[in-house]
Image (tube, rainbow, N blue to C red):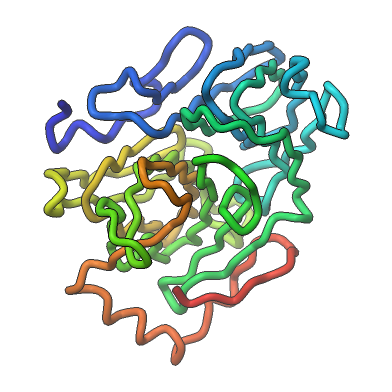
Length: 313
């Protein structure tokens, strides 16, 4: 079993074969979620069929996905799917491709890509979620405002186990705040979900041209701490490619330095019978949500034009 401070992995620490990072059930104490990250550079990487569902998420650039016969069955997009992608993770939502358990595929670039994964024996059909279909949510208020792309959440995608979204926190703001947990099965109140945070950071949008030197070291920070379910203690500077795992415990805040924007891709799944994201705030911090209605959202968001769903959860 991992010790409390072994749940944070700098970029490349989880490298395997052609992949920059791989999280799966081979890691001690990890069972329900996975992620693969790669800079394709024109390479072709294969994801074989099995009892695992996946979502292909272009991070920078576009990718071409070639489905095997099982993955293409019943999918009206054909066996070859081009995902347009985006210039970077800070350029609004991307189109994604969900491939259910029992289907395999190959993916090629040139692009930087993440593959979210969850083991399951349940079969779901392949689905292409266009960027225009992705619900874009501005969550929180004031310095707690962040932008959420809900392409893989229950209201958008019919997956078996995966709950996936991505979050943009503009420079100087906090997200995953107040700290919260989802490590107990309390029907209607809290669900058990492992969670992966994959991070990227970049100079904040809107900085004057010529302000940022090429040698800059963009970063944010991320915190976890223990709950009754287990001991965990992450207090890390996070940079592009870093991964934090949250098997249990309170997590947050994720903090963007004033000069840098922070992004993370969240991958969640768990053992509960219902696929639902239900959380419990740290009771010492829950009060801050009551301050949001009086502040209003950060006017810098959203970072790209898209339909907005107002929310102060």
